[in-house]
Image (tube, rainbow, N blue to C red; front, side, top):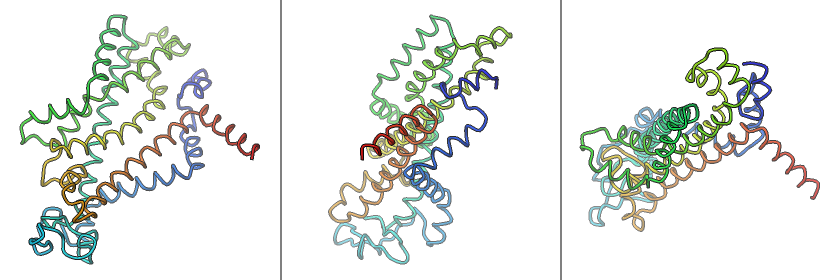
Length: 326
C-alpha cells in the first residue's frame, strides 16, 4: 500500500497496516457486540456439531415417536412443556413425536447455510456489476444502472415464490433458495460499490496506477477492492439477517425447504396450528430465529461503527457531552 493510500485510509475505509487490530479494539469496547458475537459463535458451533449432539442425546431429526404424542387429542405431546425430558431435551414435535432439539439444530444448519450462501452470491454479483458500472463508459454505466434499479424495484418475496414454485421438485431446495435470493438481492451491493468506485477512481493513487499501465480490472483488483472492503463488509452484515428472514418466510409459505429437511420457517409454518395446544413448538423456533437475527443486527451495527473511525469519533464526542451534562 502506498503512503497516499495509508493517508486516505481513515476517510475511505481502505484497510491499512494494523487496521484489523484497530477494529478489534473498537469492538471490544462494546459489550453488546461481544455478546452478539458470542451468541452467533455458539449457534454456529451447535449447527456444525448437530450430528454429534444428536448422537449424544440419542435421537435423530427424522424418527417418528408415535408413543410420545396423544392421538386422542390430535397428536399433542405427552408430558409437560411439550414432552421435555431426559431423552428429549426440548420436547417433541406435535403430531409426529420427532425430537425438537435435534430438528432445531439441523434447522439452524439449513437456515444459516442458505443465508450465508445467498449473501456471498449477492456480494459477488453486486461487486462485479458495481465495479463494471463505475469503471465502464457512460453507456455501460447507464445500462447496468437501469438493471440495478429493476432489481431493487422487484418485490423479492413475490418473485422468489414464483421462481421456486416452477422449479422441479427434485432440484436441491437449499441450493435453489441460495440462487434465487442471491440473484435477486444484489442491487443494494451494486449501488454501494458503484458509488464508492465513482468516488475513488478520481483519487491520485488510482490515477497513478492507470498512468503506470494498469488496465481497468487490474485497477479494480489492486487499488479499489481494498478500499471497498469496509462498506461491503458492513452491508453484508446487514444482508445476512435479512436473508435469514427471507428464507424463513419462503419456508413458512411452503415454497422453501421441503420436509423432511428441517428449517425454522418450515417449523413455524406447521406450528401455527399448535399454538394453543403446544406453545413450546411455536416459541422455540421463533425464539431461535429472533435471537439469531437480533445478534446479526447488533454485530453488524458494531462492525459498521468499528470500520468507520468518523462514526466512532462522533459516538465518543456524544458520550463525553452526555457525561458533562449529567
